[in-house]
Image (cartoon, rainbow over the protein chains, first blue to last red):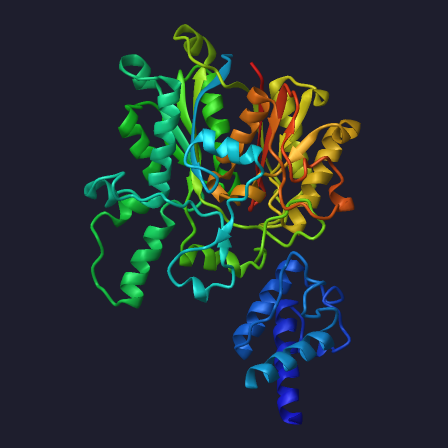
Length: 91
Length: 402
């Protein structure tokens, strides 16, 4: 499980940092998307890339990014959300 | 400069198959948005739209015509037929040689692309129908209208996403006003409600899964529609000489480009277009009684549009009415400005302001009179019709009672 968790985290940070035009080392779990300069369109692209990577569907509406079921308030919350979606999918 | 009037109107959209039915539905605050009926709808995450129902090509067009008419062309021809019948125009000679067709569409024959890609990619076929290209091209609808109604002057298609129709009508207005043409048939059409068309929009994550609620605090996105709106723009003296029934005058227009972002709207670009339309028409902001909003129901558009209106109109913003009929017929993309022009004509001619339906919660960022949920009787002399497209391209038309 530890190894799997690590993989998800590494992969998500890789996707987000690529979108932000940063090195993965510059993005931490505490970072917010605003901190690293990801705007609403950048976020839509991140969500798409994450869905493709893990073959999951993230409940996300760009009209109300804050109010959906999926918490995007920090990189940490995003990783947690993805982990639970992957777990749900695995059943 | 010549004066330009509208002497014919035609439409088909989710609210009705003609102008009278559409206006009646707007007056009654009806919603034309419902569950989509199309192939593979179960693979879509967005399953609602403002679909045209009960419109079958079979019976309306012959086999040869159907092989050439994509659904967006079928809609256009139906609307053009209504508009020209109403106008009573039958063009010939010099008039026909100078009169033309300028229409808007964003996607053109989207379902023709969709069907034929499916055929070659999914079904593995190696041959498509010989008329795929003339059927899907964006100017197909304008061409068929020109053939059907003997319009031999300047004719072309304008494509600026959600502002296509308004750009087309602005161009038509300019051509009649300058004396280049006595009559231009104009408006626009769209038919993107097929699997590929809806799937493409889903990608952007701006679509609502349940309803289009412009200006409402709980709005959660846009809903696509389909259909066409077509109008006869005619030089005033030409119309008077033949005793035409004049619906209203086209008073002015303006276009602007945000030059900023490919999808996010700009308050400044929208404001410049509205301001410019007033200036072009020689109107004061206090003259405007109603604005047909772009009002897509997305978070970004509605607050930006309201802020732009507040900037342009100052204290008068609190006195005018602004509604979005997209709440009823959905967003017809390249055809939307044309169908929405009907709400403008209804306001000027009948004194009925179409409502914004689905309005549930006030949003402090959209604190204007959005004519919530019920149509209103009101006398207005001047109206604006807003269209703000992806790509930051804006077109606003000013209309006046005559």
